[in-house]
Length: 156
Image (cartoon, rainbow, N blue to C red; front, top):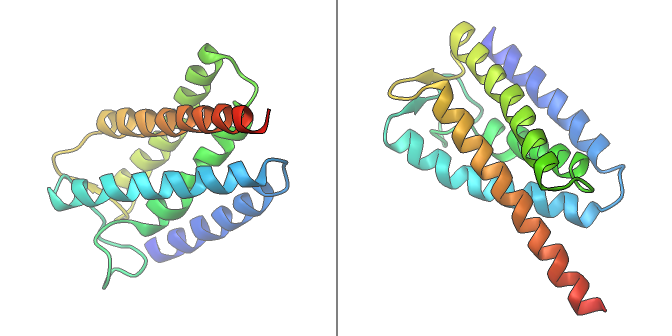
């Protein structure tokens, strides 16, 4: 059953990614996606290496201890949508949207932890997930703000 859930999440992720590319700012979309995958994989290796979280059922489990589906695909896609919906938002709007996207992802993770073997918390809680997802998402969003401001200065 867990493999079916993984494949369903992969298919949903592919569909969401394709729709995210239909909006303008494709360069930004791809940059957000790649930055998020890079940073989340870095922290994912540490969390799994310290045995705080375990992924008993995962794609390419023979080669990866972390959840590559989450770290390299689903989480970066969520961050792309967060970036796109908060693109014209002010600082407070960015924080609120970041909290809402983070809450949705954390709820999904908690449900997976409780009802599947996709993730098992050892010395980890949903609160750690919420905090790390929020901080990483907000960091990438602010990094993109700096990148875009630097690019505007170069072109003007």
